[in-house]
Amino acid sequence: MELFLDVTLHLLVGFAATFKLFLLTLIFSLPLGLIVSFGSMSSFFPVRWLVRIFVWMIRGTPLMLQLFVVFYGPGILWGTTIFSNREVAAVVAFVINYSCYFSEIYRSGIEGVPKGQNEAGHVLGMTKPQIFYHITLLQVVKRIVPPMTNEIMTLVKDTSLARIIAVVDIIFVAQRYITSSALIWPLFYSGVFYLLFCGVLTILFRALERKLRFFSV
Image (tube, one colour):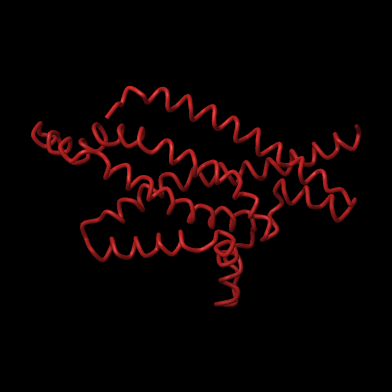
Protein backbone atom coordinates (compact mmCIF):
# COMPACT_ATOMS: atom_id res chain seq x y z
CA MET A 1 0.00 0.00 0.00
CA GLU A 2 2.81 2.39 0.88
CA LEU A 3 4.48 1.68 -2.47
CA PHE A 4 1.23 2.32 -4.31
CA LEU A 5 0.81 5.70 -2.59
CA ASP A 6 4.41 6.62 -3.33
CA VAL A 7 3.97 5.76 -7.02
CA THR A 8 0.68 7.69 -7.16
CA LEU A 9 2.25 10.82 -5.68
CA HIS A 10 5.17 10.71 -8.10
CA LEU A 11 2.84 10.13 -11.04
CA LEU A 12 0.73 13.09 -9.94
CA VAL A 13 3.83 15.27 -10.10
CA GLY A 14 4.51 13.97 -13.60
CA PHE A 15 0.89 14.49 -14.59
CA ALA A 16 1.12 18.13 -13.46
CA ALA A 17 3.88 18.63 -16.06
CA THR A 18 1.77 16.81 -18.65
CA PHE A 19 -1.23 19.01 -17.91
CA LYS A 20 0.91 22.15 -18.09
CA LEU A 21 2.17 21.19 -21.56
CA PHE A 22 -1.38 20.38 -22.65
CA LEU A 23 -2.80 23.66 -21.35
CA LEU A 24 -0.06 25.89 -22.77
CA THR A 25 -0.37 24.19 -26.14
CA LEU A 26 -4.09 24.93 -26.25
CA ILE A 27 -3.72 28.53 -25.05
CA PHE A 28 -1.27 29.38 -27.82
CA SER A 29 -2.24 27.05 -30.67
CA LEU A 30 -5.98 27.79 -30.76
CA PRO A 31 -5.62 31.50 -31.63
CA LEU A 32 -2.51 30.88 -33.74
CA GLY A 33 -4.37 28.22 -35.70
CA LEU A 34 -7.08 30.77 -36.55
CA ILE A 35 -4.43 33.19 -37.84
CA VAL A 36 -2.82 30.43 -39.91
CA SER A 37 -6.22 29.53 -41.37
CA PHE A 38 -6.68 33.13 -42.52
CA GLY A 39 -3.30 32.88 -44.24
CA SER A 40 -4.27 29.64 -45.98
CA MET A 41 -7.45 31.34 -47.28
CA SER A 42 -5.73 34.59 -48.24
CA SER A 43 -6.62 36.07 -51.61
CA PHE A 44 -2.94 37.00 -52.01
CA PHE A 45 -1.49 33.95 -53.76
CA PRO A 46 2.12 34.07 -52.39
CA VAL A 47 0.86 34.19 -48.78
CA ARG A 48 -1.69 31.44 -49.37
CA TRP A 49 0.92 29.26 -51.11
CA LEU A 50 3.58 29.71 -48.40
CA VAL A 51 1.16 29.06 -45.55
CA ARG A 52 -0.28 25.95 -47.18
CA ILE A 53 3.20 24.57 -47.89
CA PHE A 54 4.17 25.15 -44.26
CA VAL A 55 0.99 23.46 -42.98
CA TRP A 56 1.59 20.53 -45.34
CA MET A 57 5.15 20.10 -44.06
CA ILE A 58 4.12 20.20 -40.40
CA ARG A 59 1.18 17.84 -40.86
CA GLY A 60 3.25 15.51 -43.03
CA THR A 61 6.12 14.97 -40.59
CA PRO A 62 6.04 13.28 -37.15
CA LEU A 63 5.71 15.42 -34.05
CA MET A 64 8.64 13.47 -32.59
CA LEU A 65 10.88 14.70 -35.41
CA GLN A 66 9.66 18.26 -34.90
CA LEU A 67 10.58 18.07 -31.21
CA PHE A 68 14.11 17.05 -32.19
CA VAL A 69 14.35 19.84 -34.76
CA VAL A 70 13.15 22.55 -32.37
CA PHE A 71 15.38 21.48 -29.48
CA TYR A 72 18.51 20.16 -31.22
CA GLY A 73 18.26 21.81 -34.64
CA PRO A 74 19.71 25.25 -33.79
CA GLY A 75 22.72 23.67 -32.09
CA ILE A 76 23.41 21.39 -35.06
CA LEU A 77 22.95 24.11 -37.70
CA TRP A 78 24.37 27.19 -36.01
CA GLY A 79 26.23 25.86 -32.98
CA THR A 80 23.96 27.70 -30.56
CA THR A 81 21.07 26.72 -28.32
CA ILE A 82 17.87 28.74 -28.59
CA PHE A 83 15.93 26.80 -25.97
CA SER A 84 17.94 26.03 -22.87
CA ASN A 85 14.70 24.97 -21.18
CA ARG A 86 13.38 21.65 -22.49
CA GLU A 87 9.82 22.41 -21.41
CA VAL A 88 9.80 25.62 -23.44
CA ALA A 89 11.13 23.77 -26.49
CA ALA A 90 8.38 21.17 -26.10
CA VAL A 91 5.69 23.87 -25.88
CA VAL A 92 7.02 25.60 -29.01
CA ALA A 93 7.07 22.34 -31.00
CA PHE A 94 3.58 21.37 -29.84
CA VAL A 95 2.15 24.83 -30.56
CA ILE A 96 3.55 24.86 -34.09
CA ASN A 97 2.26 21.35 -34.75
CA TYR A 98 -1.23 21.77 -33.36
CA SER A 99 -1.78 25.27 -34.73
CA CYS A 100 -1.40 23.76 -38.21
CA TYR A 101 -3.90 21.00 -37.47
CA PHE A 102 -6.33 23.46 -35.88
CA SER A 103 -5.95 25.81 -38.86
CA GLU A 104 -7.34 23.15 -41.19
CA ILE A 105 -10.29 22.60 -38.88
CA TYR A 106 -10.94 26.35 -38.76
CA ARG A 107 -10.63 26.62 -42.54
CA SER A 108 -13.11 23.81 -43.18
CA GLY A 109 -15.53 25.33 -40.68
CA ILE A 110 -15.32 28.80 -42.19
CA GLU A 111 -15.61 27.59 -45.78
CA GLY A 112 -18.56 25.39 -44.76
CA VAL A 113 -20.74 28.37 -43.91
CA PRO A 114 -23.07 29.09 -46.88
CA LYS A 115 -21.86 32.06 -48.93
CA GLY A 116 -25.42 33.30 -49.14
CA GLN A 117 -25.25 34.32 -45.51
CA ASN A 118 -22.24 36.55 -46.20
CA GLU A 119 -24.10 38.11 -49.10
CA ALA A 120 -27.12 38.72 -46.87
CA GLY A 121 -24.86 40.47 -44.37
CA HIS A 122 -23.54 42.75 -47.11
CA VAL A 123 -27.10 43.56 -48.18
CA LEU A 124 -27.85 44.58 -44.59
CA GLY A 125 -24.91 46.97 -44.67
CA MET A 126 -22.60 44.98 -42.40
CA THR A 127 -18.83 45.19 -42.77
CA LYS A 128 -16.67 42.08 -43.30
CA PRO A 129 -15.52 41.97 -39.63
CA GLN A 130 -19.15 42.32 -38.48
CA ILE A 131 -20.25 39.51 -40.79
CA PHE A 132 -17.47 37.27 -39.51
CA TYR A 133 -18.03 37.89 -35.78
CA HIS A 134 -21.84 38.07 -35.79
CA ILE A 135 -22.78 35.55 -38.48
CA THR A 136 -19.90 33.27 -39.45
CA LEU A 137 -18.03 32.72 -36.18
CA LEU A 138 -20.96 31.34 -34.17
CA GLN A 139 -21.72 28.77 -36.86
CA VAL A 140 -18.05 27.89 -37.24
CA VAL A 141 -17.81 27.11 -33.53
CA LYS A 142 -20.64 24.57 -33.80
CA ARG A 143 -19.12 22.96 -36.89
CA ILE A 144 -15.60 22.61 -35.49
CA VAL A 145 -16.36 21.30 -32.00
CA PRO A 146 -16.45 17.55 -32.97
CA PRO A 147 -13.20 17.53 -35.00
CA MET A 148 -11.56 19.88 -32.50
CA THR A 149 -12.52 17.47 -29.73
CA ASN A 150 -10.71 14.64 -31.52
CA GLU A 151 -7.57 16.74 -31.94
CA ILE A 152 -7.58 17.81 -28.31
CA MET A 153 -7.95 14.18 -27.20
CA THR A 154 -4.99 13.34 -29.41
CA LEU A 155 -3.04 16.17 -27.81
CA VAL A 156 -3.57 14.63 -24.37
CA LYS A 157 -1.82 11.45 -25.53
CA ASP A 158 0.78 13.19 -27.68
CA THR A 159 2.15 15.00 -24.63
CA SER A 160 3.90 11.72 -23.80
CA LEU A 161 6.23 12.36 -26.77
CA ALA A 162 7.87 15.21 -24.86
CA ARG A 163 9.91 12.66 -22.93
CA ILE A 164 12.14 12.08 -25.96
CA ILE A 165 13.83 15.42 -25.20
CA ALA A 166 13.90 14.50 -21.49
CA VAL A 167 10.86 16.50 -20.39
CA VAL A 168 9.77 14.97 -17.09
CA ASP A 169 6.13 14.08 -17.75
CA ILE A 170 4.01 11.28 -16.30
CA ILE A 171 5.39 8.63 -18.70
CA PHE A 172 8.95 9.73 -17.95
CA VAL A 173 8.27 9.30 -14.22
CA ALA A 174 6.66 5.89 -14.75
CA GLN A 175 9.63 4.69 -16.80
CA ARG A 176 12.00 5.56 -13.97
CA TYR A 177 10.43 2.78 -11.90
CA ILE A 178 11.38 0.26 -14.59
CA THR A 179 15.07 1.16 -14.43
CA SER A 180 15.32 1.92 -10.71
CA SER A 181 13.02 -0.71 -9.19
CA ALA A 182 12.27 -3.15 -12.01
CA LEU A 183 8.58 -2.27 -11.68
CA ILE A 184 6.54 -2.14 -14.86
CA TRP A 185 3.05 -1.70 -13.39
CA PRO A 186 3.50 2.08 -12.79
CA LEU A 187 3.78 2.48 -16.56
CA PHE A 188 0.38 0.84 -17.04
CA TYR A 189 -0.98 2.71 -14.03
CA SER A 190 -0.11 6.01 -15.73
CA GLY A 191 -2.71 5.11 -18.37
CA VAL A 192 -5.42 5.56 -15.73
CA PHE A 193 -4.50 9.24 -15.48
CA TYR A 194 -4.88 9.66 -19.24
CA LEU A 195 -8.21 7.83 -19.22
CA LEU A 196 -9.61 9.97 -16.42
CA PHE A 197 -8.41 13.18 -18.05
CA CYS A 198 -9.90 12.23 -21.42
CA GLY A 199 -13.12 11.24 -19.64
CA VAL A 200 -13.43 14.68 -18.07
CA LEU A 201 -12.75 16.37 -21.42
CA THR A 202 -15.36 14.17 -23.12
CA ILE A 203 -18.01 15.24 -20.61
CA LEU A 204 -17.10 18.92 -21.04
CA PHE A 205 -17.18 18.81 -24.82
CA ARG A 206 -20.48 16.94 -24.90
CA ALA A 207 -21.95 19.64 -22.68
CA LEU A 208 -20.61 22.27 -25.08
CA GLU A 209 -22.13 20.47 -28.07
CA ARG A 210 -25.52 20.42 -26.34
CA LYS A 211 -25.32 24.17 -25.74
CA LEU A 212 -24.56 24.77 -29.43
CA ARG A 213 -27.44 22.70 -30.78
CA PHE A 214 -29.58 25.78 -31.40
CA PHE A 215 -27.30 26.60 -34.33
CA SER A 216 -29.00 24.10 -36.63
CA VAL A 217 -27.56 25.25 -39.95
